Amino acid sequence: MVDKNSQKVITDNRKARHDYFVEETYEAGIELFGTEVKSLRMGGVNLKDSYCEIDGGELFAHGIHISPYDKGNIFNKDPLRPKKLLMHKREIMKLTGLVSRDGYTLVPLSLYFKGSRVKMALGLCKGKKLYDKRDDIAKKDANRLIERHMKDRNNKDY
Image (cartoon, rainbow, N blue to C red; front, top):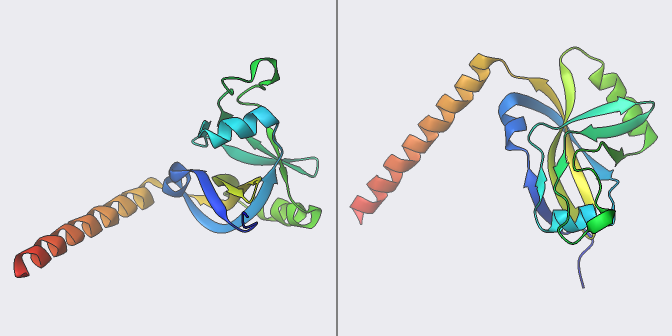
């Protein structure tokens, strides 16, 4: 029997963590059609340039590309159509207030299966400046170099 709390990650938006500081994360359901879910199970999704928008008290995700299902024929939907996100009204009102602040936006961080349902991790994000991105890259390179030296050192000591 499948555990309802088990999570299987479909895709991550690594570009979002590179371009933004993630302040908070939220979980939202996503309204999809059958052929879109089948395409997700095959891994046909791209979150690279996606963002979320609140319109009329409802939350929508734009720019998520879900590839058409090969065997879906007439039931396939537009790959770039806006997808409605499912959250409690209270949470959406809270996000409306947070996004209205200067420089904050909602960005999809990942898609995953939670049991049999598709969920999306949303991040309340603030944009990084170019020098912040350079600092992150420099730290990552330094850590990689340290790990490489530690590995060489451990292999020589026997």
